[in-house]
Image (cartoon, rainbow, N blue to C red):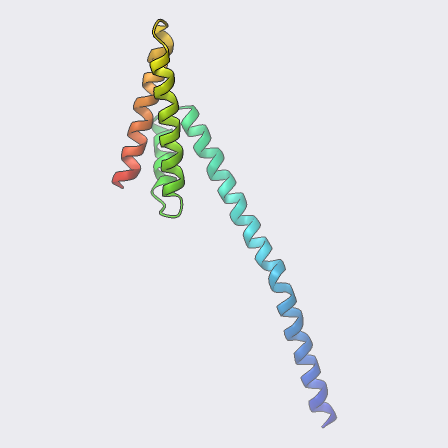
Length: 117
């Protein structure tokens, strides 16, 4: 009888310790997820700032993930609105207009690509 009682206490302690470690394990996963999202945001920010085919591929790879599609598309639309507004404001400087037009074209292609895939 005494041995059974001790086994019960030991098994209860093991169960209790495993339950108490679950929040710590969950925090590790959450921190890892937060880190991955941070890496994604920095990659997307860099891709938007430096338009190229590689940047378009980066945006497409993250933008076609259904978990992030709405956020990324909204971000691209906001960037597009800002670039269009700046493009409308410049009347004289052709160099700036050309750079802004390239950005507008790139953002439209990026939005179209994540919408279609």
